[in-house]
Length: 150
Image (tube, rainbow, N blue to C red):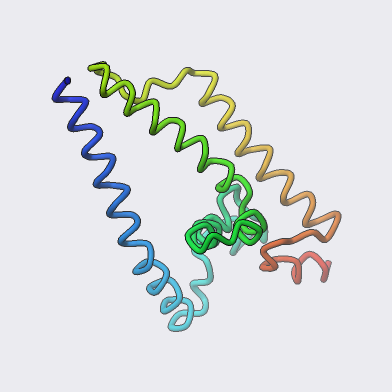
């Protein structure tokens, strides 16, 4: 097997493992920060200043719900994050197969995949805000107070 490909896979595993270990620490620090500095709010410009959701708003809540195996809450928090989990799993399995075959490029993704991902991000971000503003549908419950008051 190619040593560069092995190093790539090792770095991927270390990054995922570190993210899993650091996730609870991030949640504690974020909760402490909101209690200590309430003006900090979420730290997202779209959320705090424009009162809109970015496509990844609720992603942390969705990840936490997935770890609890609460799929309904995860979908409510951010369906795009939930939909990306099986896609990431497929890409991971493909990388393992390529590693076993001795291929150098583990994560060869066609250009149309990136275009589709960016389009999905944009459509999801726009759709969730339109539903909140015009239909009063806010599954996160963070911003409906603002849009109901207008």
